[in-house]
Amino acid sequence: MKGSEILPPNLAVDIAGISLKSPVLTASGTFGFGEEYRPLTGLEGIGALVVKGITCRPRPGNLPPRLFETPAGLLNSIGLQNPGVEAFISCCLPALRRHGLPVIVNIAGETVEEYAHLARRLDGAAGIAGLEVNVSCPNVKKGGMQFGSDPYLAAQVTRAVKESTSLPVIVKLSPNVTSIAAVAESVAKAGADALSLINTLLGMAIDIKTRRPVLGHILGGLSGPAVKPVALGAVWQVYRAVDLPIIGMGGITTGEDAVEFFLAGASAVAVGTAHFVNPYAARDVAEGIKNYLLAYGFKDIKEIVGAAHL
Image (cartoon, rainbow, N blue to C red; front, side, top):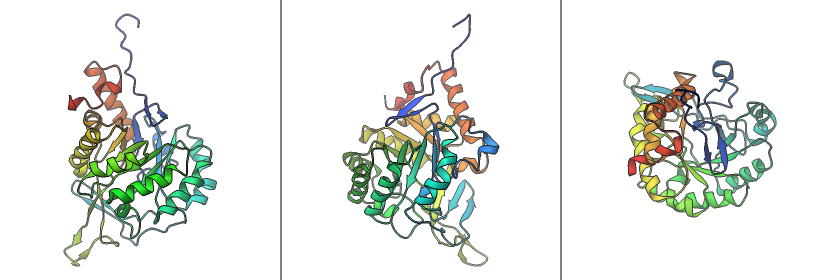
């Protein structure tokens, strides 16, 4: 260090063997496959791309309307629209590899066997750093939250995926449960390498003029600033329950928001809904984290992980 020059703090983290230059990821379902945002953001400040949910077969998604803005967030009922695993591997993955960032693929199934098939199929595909197992999507008729709301079923899915891949397995947990810590403990025992939480909260909206539900699927998932206190509480509980890396998410729009998640026990964070109003959200959050560390004299992001528990 020359003179009064201050070295920037280290933001690099390791999540279940996945090396990230930044602790800020993109939340699945909010960043497409990366290409959609590249012309706008250049992908600065992002540690890994977590792509939208992939299923065995193509899915058209739910009937519209599928999005509805609330006073402090967003209701979505997309229904896991995606091209299917084969088209993802042949058409989407080559472009994702060109970004030079770790790619984490979110997978969703209607049966335990479908999760296992997806894990096997993606295991041999070049350019994938890890799998995020979606047992928490609230706006599909089969699978998703049905698995994540039951500790036993969540463990079954986790075990099947672990046995079908050599990739790191990150299980995404639902807040729509009695005890998220109990589900976390169950999937940890089943072999999960890391956890991401939370997925969206189940909710709806009604048009008082038509006297009908706004969303075509009636129920949807609430995300955005409204869910941040719930997400933060979930990270706090899970950090105390299991010894696994946690990717915290839910309502993060600023670096200060992200710092709260690190203090609660997250080792990394994901930015989602904020991208719909600010394409540079991930970059801005990463910059805010760095500024906080500088302001309080921390040299490494890992110094503040779980610090609020001390």
